Every structure is written in C-alpha cells, then in structure tokens.
Length: 113
Image (tube, rainbow, N blue to C red):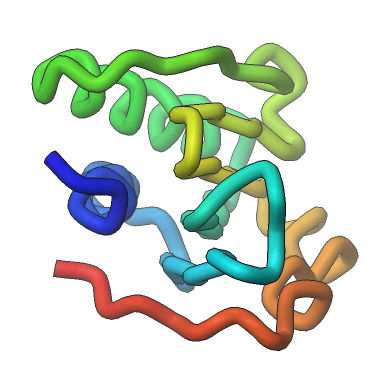
C-alpha cells in the first residue's frame, strides 16, 4: 500500500463514521515531517473518538503500523501518526480555529476514494 492509498483509506474510515469536510492534503515538498495530511472533524467528543477509533482499526486491518495517537481522551484534536501520513480529527469547534487547510494553503488536495 503506498502513502496516498493509506491516506485515502484513513479518509474512507473517517467518512464511514460521518466525519465532516474530509480533506487530504499533499504536503510533499512543503513539509519535512510528513507527505500527507488527512483533516476532518466530528460534531461531538464521542464522534471524534469514534472517527479516531475507525481510522486506527482500518490501519490495523490493512497491516499499517501507527506510530502514535495523541489527544484521544480530550477529543478536541486527535492526531494520528501513521508515519508519512498524519490524520487530524478535530472537534467541530476546533477545526475552524486551527484552519490547517489555510495554514498549509500551498498543499494540493488529493481526491478521496
């Protein structure tokens, strides 16, 4: 599985849990620490946790190793580190505040599957 397929699979898992505004950003050449960001949000803490769990489970099913997950308990901004793919699952109240799409405005969007 290549990196864009991993990002697309993570995005699909998030969408299955009704994540909102799921976006994949190609940050190759812009960032030294990752190649792709998957950005989405949930409307409640429980939904944010469900989305993060779904991404984690999908990666396990596909034998993709997670390097770590931060922020799950608080469920305001869960960061899932899959190496060169980083998934950001925001609570709806945090998404617009941090506005990663604007911050990484030079990144191209990748089509989710």
